[in-house]
Each structure stands twice: as structure tokens, then as C-alpha cells.
Image 1 (cartoon, helix red, strand yellow):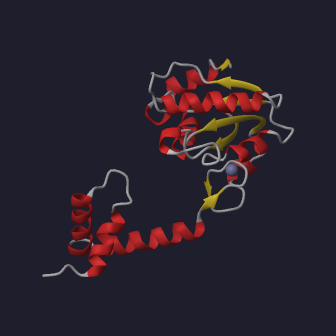
Image 2 (cartoon, rainbow, N blue to C red):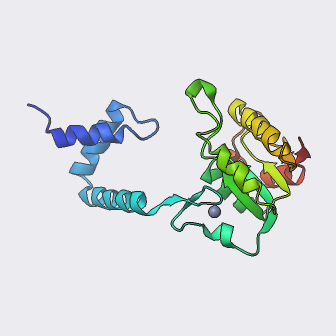
Length: 198
Ligand SMILES: [Zn+2]
């Protein structure tokens, strides 16, 4: 018997999720259609609405529903500090650690020439523009302590120093190869306090 093409399409579509191979895509599709059609419908709706309504904040590049996100609008944040992180999850970690009251820029990735990720892919032109607004004095590089994160921090450091900004890197209380998302907030807070000039 031939598999209906809509089902084939669903299985193929599910493979866009990280770590999902053909077998688990098939399992997910069967589960949704057989056991949880309501869940599937909620998922489809949420996906549709997210795609239609969520964009990148013009200032920090994080996900936002408005042109400029709430954090970037907040008068309580210190606009002279700009913390550069790789992902929205990292920004969340920084916020949960409650160690930082400045602004952010979310790269949505890290430089990785082998995977074809270059400066343009992580929005460095926009970062430079954001950091050169005349208010930002210090850029705090909080990319991961992985090979890609370190290379990215180095590259950005060069770029921003040329523009007369103070550039610091969060301290290595974090493990080598460590990703911000997987560090406890105490360690992260310490790393921000002990950041050093680069
Ligand atoms: Zn923003």
C-alpha cells in the first residue's frame, strides 16, 4: 500500500527539527495523527501564528512581536552597556542570573566558517551599527566558551575596539567548551562581575 502523500509530507517536514531522523519523524507523525489530533491542531495553529507574528527586534535582534522589544524600550536598563550573546536562550540565562542591567544584542549563532556561517549570517553589520549609537560605551562579549564562541568574541572584539568602544569578555568561571545555557546562574553572575578587558 502506498503511503498517502500528505503523511509523507508531514514526516519529511518534521525532519527539520534538530536531532530528528526519519524513524523519529515517522513516530511523531503517527503519534500526532493517531493519538493526539487535538495536540497536532494546537501545534499547527501555534506554528502558523508564530511565523506570522514573531520577528526580530530592530535593536537587539531577539525574537519580538513588536518592531522594538520591551527590554530595548525599558528606561530602567543601562543603555551604555551592550551584552552580546549567541542565542535568545543565553539572554534568558543572563536575565535569570540577575547580574546585568544593560542592553543586549543576540547574534542568533556564532561564526563557523566550516559550516558556512560568516559575519553576515550573525548580523555583525547590525551589531556594529547598534553599538555605534553614541550611547553604548562598553560591549560585554558573552558568547559561549566553545571554539566558535571564542572565535566570534575575538572577531567582534576587533570590530568594536576599532570604533572606540571598551570591549570586555565575561570571565572564565565557565567551563571550557561551556555553553551559557547550561551553566548555573551563580557561576554566570560571577563571570559577568569578573569580566575582563580584551
Ligand atoms: Zn530588543
